[in-house]
Image 1 (cartoon, rainbow, N blue to C red):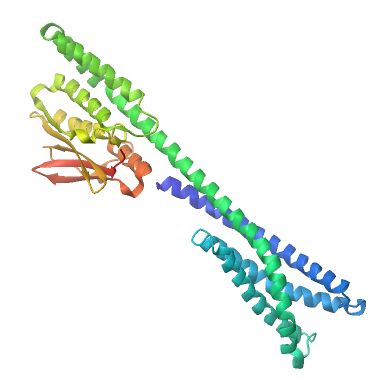
Image 2 (cartoon, rainbow, N blue to C red):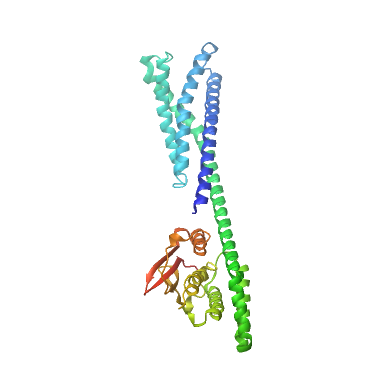
Amino acid sequence: MSRAITNTIEDQAGDRAESRLASFFVRAFWIVAGATLLIFLLFFSQGYIKLSDTGRRLLAIFIFSACIAVPSMVLATWLTVRWSHRIPRLIFLVQAGCFVFTASAGSFVAEGILWLIGICPYNSFWRAYRGDLLFSIVVTLAIGMSVATFETLTYRLQAATLEARTRQVEQERAYKLLAEARLSSLESRLQPHFLFNTLNSIAALIHSDPVRAEDTVAKLASLLRFSLSAQNNGLIPLAQELKIVRDYLEIESTRFGPRLRYEVSVPRELDSVRVPPLALQTLVENSVKHVAARRPQGASLRISASRDAGSVVLEVLDDGPGFSLEATTPEHGLGNLASRLELLFGSAARLETAREDGGWAVRIAFPAES
């Protein structure tokens, strides 16, 4: 995941954390107050509470509700966030066990508070605790599981929504980078030195080799058309990419003549493998621009493709001095390509350079997709 997307998710997570904290206190207040009122009315309707001891009983019920409800909410929320996606089928059973524990511990703490303020006599502490424990567990499970079920389903919906939004952001960024790659490719074709040199070469060929001149015009048109209309799904057959690479090299050959030497070594069985558009062409163009165009002796290129442990490897080897990928910027063709590979394949893709066979190789690798 790119840094921009990571920052977006972190910002969203921070906003949600602050919102959840405020919402937690509001919900805790209403749950404690509601549970207190519900239990009070239940006891009052059964005749367990007389009007003479209403305040004392109401205070006792409130203490029990607070001691049980607040830790239950904290633990249930933690379990939902940390374990809901790990054990989706067992999360409700784990939450039930959590409520039994908080009901038992909360009842003990509440009885202790009542003893400290003189409502519960010391000699009846354990008898009162045992008498209240079963009721506390039943009420906690009834209320807690209802709230926990709602919270769990809400959390899963929010997580699914965030994941969908994240994927949408990644897809939109991938499309943006692809558009930038197409625009960069088109700009490089329309730059005066490329376009004028190509047109001059065509003009020179019209009398000496009209067939080749016509073929060069067709290749130039094909190259421009492809730069504008690369498929929006981000992947094209390798055979289509190779056609563009050959067209580009043939056009450049009219300029450099014998100074540009190249060899394409790609097995036919890889023609249907889908690759990012302008990926291999970017590697080739990098060698032509920075090696062949800058040296009197030109450059020798070897373009190859292979499979390696479920991955497709595309490589361009030239006889230039080499360079460091760290020196490339995001606006550079290779920098754009690296960003696109990351968005399309994540950590499963890589762009690397290495000294190989007395030359300098630039290669990309990504998961194979027929």
